[in-house]
Image (tube, rainbow, N blue to C red; front, side):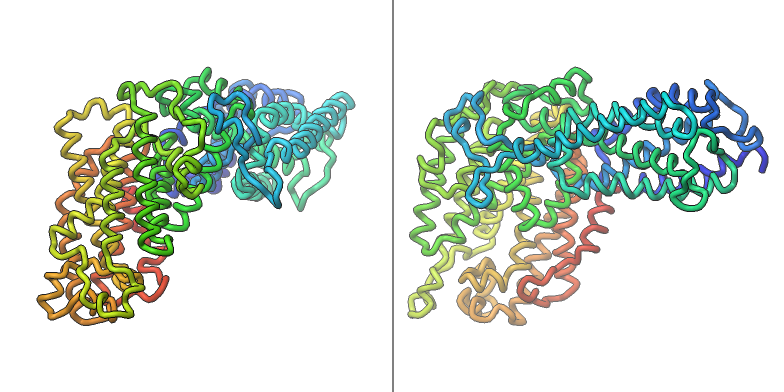
Amino acid sequence: MAGLDYAFVHAKYTVPVAILLTILLHPFKTSVDNYKTIWLLAIALVSTIPWDSYLIDTKVWSYPDHVIIGAVFWRIPIEEYFFFVIQTYITSLVCIIVGKSIVPTACLPTFPTNSRSSSIEEANYKPEKEDGLVRNDCKRLRRPGILGAIFLASLVGIGAKLVHSGGHGTYLGLILVWACPVLFFLWGLSYQYILSVPGKDVIIPILLPTIYFWFVDTLALKNGTWVINPEKSFEIKLWKYLDIEEAIFFLVTNVLITFGQLSFDHTLAVINGFPETFNFAIPSWPSVSLLVRGLGVPVGDYTPKRILNLKDAIVKLQNKSRSFSLASSVFEGRLRIDLVLLYAFCRNADDLIDESETQEDARKALAKLSEAVSKTFSYNQPTGEKSPPANLKSEPSVPISAFYDLPEEMASSLEMLPTHILPLKPIQDLLEGFRLDLQFPSTSEGTDNNFLDAEFPIKTEPDLKRYGYFVAGTVAELLIHLVFYHSASAKDITPKERAEIIQAGVDMGIALQYINISRDIAKDAAMGRCYIPSDWLAGYNLTPTMVIENPDRDAVRLLRRRLLGIAMEIYYQNRGAIERLPTDGGARKGVRGAVENYVEIGRVLLKQDGKMPIGNEETVSKTRRLWVFVKALCA
């Protein structure tokens, strides 16, 4: 079809892939993703137009007149402009999709000391140890950083020599002279971050689109859609029809796009990750000056303790809560970071109690934690809803772990908790839930008759609801406080509506805890606990002790269905409140995704009609969980 050959390449090969990637990313896409992609599209157009125009003018490559629609600007056919856009767009989407699993701030390099810190503890902090030695990311990354810079500088020199010599090396030289100075610049800005992120986040966005565009380019060259001047190239083929220069071009340009995306992630990781330095709300679309400030912060000014504790929190989240780990991928910036740190604190507090050797040890640990929480909150009282103090963590010179004799992981998660944002009461109520857990008789007493006659704390349905509030409703309340704080549009929500949304969140948390209890009846029984109200059990001539001895009873199956029925009723009554949450920061989508993922556990348990999960068997498969999550995000 005359005049449509070039356009046909896009219609058949590049556009369908772009549409597919857009559909795949759409549920997870955030405003920051749009921001980065638009910037890179603009940069790609501005930087490529004069270079490509020169290539055509000097006849490095050409196209037959009959293969284009006819619109040409600065010697470049309009289809080629579209190619600039579509390649940048496709590679950017691959980079964003692959990077959804990481929190950029957690990938920042750490430095062994920070002499600029205002905190004595921070100045003396030793980040990580490997084989007994203090880890120094800057030192570890210095050699590959220098080697990378030398390599890129050498390519610039080689390219300049090839361009100067002319002839067969012209095309390759022009590629290197055009692209490698920019790569050198990006490498100098962000090489430590690029080398610190997981390798897949760098390699996949480079290689996957490169191989695909090699395929597209091969077909276009084979059909004569565009032609490489043999006098300006080495006439070496990577394979039949694909010139080595074209192969290098697509490799280099995808490296450029990937490094550009990672450089954006680098500066956003800094400005979102260190609120003590950037003491103001970060907009979804930061200004250029703010991006430059983020890149200009020396590694020595990073807070290593915050980075490493965030890493630990992410690992704990991934290992302990598949639903919330998946949901966290759609939260943005500081909201995502603070939610991860909140989860880590709650999980570490739970582990502190559950992993104590005796109940007496657990009570002592809980008392220490309660005191530490009260003191820490007193150090970090907010001065205003949107004006946190310049030094967010007015930490004592003595580490909390030493001052209160808490395990290091527990103390660190408390120190990282955004106490300048969160109210104290829900935290205290959460700890009250752990105290309630300690009212269960110790399993060590099961050898005598005292355990058989012991009273269990969950006697009635109000007791169960109270417990559900303590251990889950409080977490939902804290989460919503973070959402309101980090959402610019939250200012439009009236105090009455805020209170309604918070109460609905609390009720939803209770419903999810009921689902959790229903799933873990056997697991809790192994710990000597039964959360089914005693008066429910009495209706079937059962006691909590009997459930602990044998949780796989027909009556327990019926009671589980009763509990799930209450949970689902609460869920249906309150799920509408999710749609009243702010949309900025990914809050609404993230909360909806987490809730639906967890509620799916309840649906599966109801469908199984009492089948008891065995050991660590997954109640909901990974595939089903992902499908439910995606549907929730698209709702």
